[in-house]
Structure formats: C-alpha cells, structure tokens
Image 1 (cartoon, helix red, strand yellow):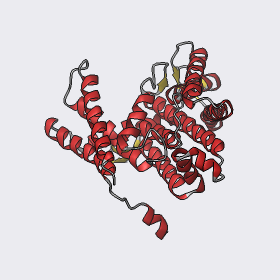
Image 2 (cartoon, helix red, strand yellow; image 1 turned 45 degrees about the vertical axis):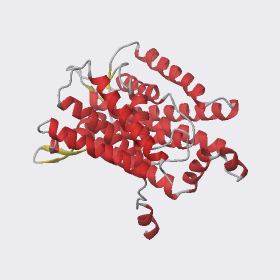
Image 3 (cartoon, helix red, strand yellow; image 1 turned 60 degrees about the vertical axis):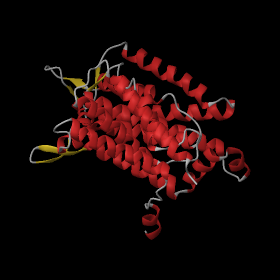
Length: 335
C-alpha cells in the first residue's frame, strides 16, 4: 500500500504544470464571463458530458503510449451502439404502447455481444498491424470504414432504441434532495480510468507499453513481446470505444448514424491537451484526465457565454491551439 500511495505523488515539471494551468485559467475566465458558471449544476453537467470522452480517451491513451494510433474509435463506438440497438429491438418484446420490454438475460446479451465484437475488431487491427508491418494509421483507417459500413448496413439509416439500463447510466446518477450529484456515467468513467492508471503504473504490461512506445527496437531486444503489446493496446482502445458508444447511446436513449462523429478528434485533443506525447512512451491516464477536464470546461464555457454557433468552432480551435503551444513551449524547457 505504501508503494501504491507513493506512486500517486506527482513530480511537477513544466509540461505537467501547463495543462493544469490552462484548466484553471479557463475555469477562472468562464467564472467571470458567464454568471452562474461556478455552480454545482455546471460540475454535474461537466461530469456527464466528459464521461464518454474519458472512457474513450483512456483506451486511446494506451495506443498512443505504444507509439501507435487508432483512427477507428469513433466508428467502433458507433458500430457497438448500433449493433446493441439492433439486437435489442430484434429480441425484445414491443408493448401496445410502443415500448420495448426484455428480460435481464436479453439485456445482458445485447450489451455483452456488441462489446465482444468491438474487442474482436481491436484484436484484428492489432494482428494486421503487427503481421503486415503496415502503420496502424493505415490499418485502423480501413477498420474505420469497415465498422462504419457495418453500422450503416444493419441500421439502414434508422434509429434504434437501447435498453433502459443504458438510459439510466447515461442520464441518472446518485441523487441528493431529488437532484443528481454524481452521474452514473462519471462513476463508470472514473472506474475505467483508475483501472487504466493502475495497469499502466503498477503492472508488467504497463511497463511494456511504455518501453514499446519509448524505443521499440530496444524493447524487442530486451525480450518485450512488442507485437502482443501493440495488439493488446488496440484491443483495449476498441473495447473502451465500444463502452463509450453504449454510454453515449444511453444519454440519447437511442442510437443513430450521426452519433460519435467527432469522438476521435475530441479524444485525441483531450489526450494531447493533457500532455501525453503522440510519439509514444510519455504520458499517462492522469494527464488524460486533465485534458478531458480542460476540453469539457471549454465546451461548456462556450455554451454558457452563448457564443454564436458559427464562431464557436473557430474560438474553440484558437483556444486549443494556444493551450497546445503553451504545453509544447514548457515541455521544451524540460531539463
């Protein structure tokens, strides 16, 4: 336990301070510019909106630490949710009022089976990346089109309902005096991030991930099964993408083909904002958490000041660029 507690202590360096400083600056700015921003309701909204990003970003962090990339997270999330909705409406009974009712066994099946398919897609991406010796960029780009095409094929462009359990996870939480205080989706995201942190920091596999991303040739010579590590990281990323897709579908209480369109770019932005390197071997789940918080606060803050919809993407891009340049400038000053 002492070693575990010691591992949670931070060694503050310039590249660690910059993301936290950016987050605090955004909170102060929106607290002044948007009356009512610093309220409990804003925190609950941030937890709810950031949960899906946190889940997906956790798995994608493994991939980036291994010096790889997974372009299919958004479409794998879409496929998982679509397959879940398709199975649910195919197996559940529809009442006269139009509601769908299913047993616990059916609900479990329509949740587990789609996640198993996302796991298989991740494993397939990993195997093809390792065996073909092609960049994961190319393999996951192809997987992106495959999963998107599969989602379009089974849905035919229609919206599908998802189990009420997902709706509860996506929209409800621990309540106090009738108000949601901690969303269930945030608890799920927190649990996934804690598991990811423990795996990366306190297991042999976690050390192998950092070694693979830091210097693959040296890691291979040291006996690290780098191919297996890359495959495992892509599988983890696919599963967390699937979980994120299910939670997002639960928030919307249904699944449509226009969901998760910006999930990949948003997750990448969160990870990079937190300070994890795109070139592997440097970063972690703690940094990803800071990045997710920064991205979510920025998104909610721009909504709070009622920025024009046409100007909002431009302003968000400028702020993100400024934060990234600040992170890079401080990282270069690392001794």
